[in-house]
Image (tube, rainbow, N blue to C red; front, top):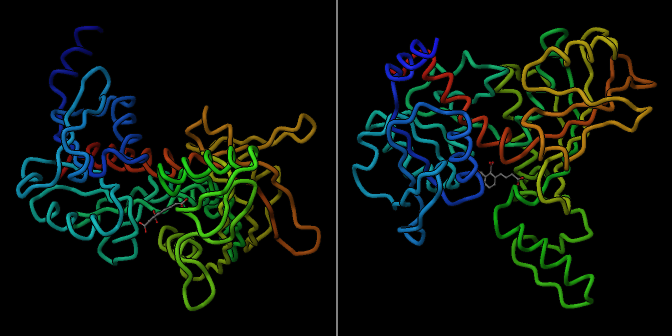
Length: 348
Ligand code: 3JN
């Protein structure tokens, strides 16, 4: 048994992997998850901006140097996980793809492109293999909603979704974590509030504004939820209305999600199918005050679903509360899972 395991390990194909945006919150999480999940790596190349050049990052026990981009850096790379923002992705992902690297991009740069699959592996893993060098990771708020709604959608089509998000500041990066920390202390100490990341004080507040506003009155984050969900389900008939709100929580996005299904489905049936859904954890026991909480994302990689209840007035209307780790399943873990699916079938 040990010998066969050993032979399998030795014979396992190993890949050259790059993380672009390695020093960011999501990049760091990608490195951690590649190690945790024992991804078959031959060489791991960490790429970040010039200002991070020479920094060292841990990959398990190893310490790896951070490099900045230079021509030819992708020539030996099999898979590149990008999380350096959409400007960097727009510039570097096509270069990497052209040199034969498969790019898994966490930005919005290519998500809605027709020749770029937008993938949540538990929902539409089959789309992965339609790639032409770039695969897109959806927005964090989209991923957790899609994963929870998918088993319901497969049972009875969903006609309409009304979603309000309660998003953690880590979605805006390291500077936002610092801003919430500093503002919280400043409010408690009755000192001046300094604002840099958000247009308003985030401490002790809720800001209904994520990303820029579009001409239709919706924010770009809200429009991402609409367009991306339709693309993942390959169903433009789903009517979606979204409100995205930033709240003073460090980690874990929460969502109030209301759906109208095509045919009747009982709450008990939804609970039963969610219990059997990989990547989902049902947390729904009102008597003992059990429901998903943002702080639970510290312990779970699954998307947590609870407070499932029937609308009292609208036929086939159902409400629920969905919570996910925005840095892991909402970003880094989803990207690594796409990479795992890719190598399962062999890269080519
Ligand atoms: O705000 C959040 O909670 C998630 C932020 C996502 C984000 C932030 C800046 C740029 C994205 C994204 O993933 O859609 C982008 C972008 O790539 O457009």
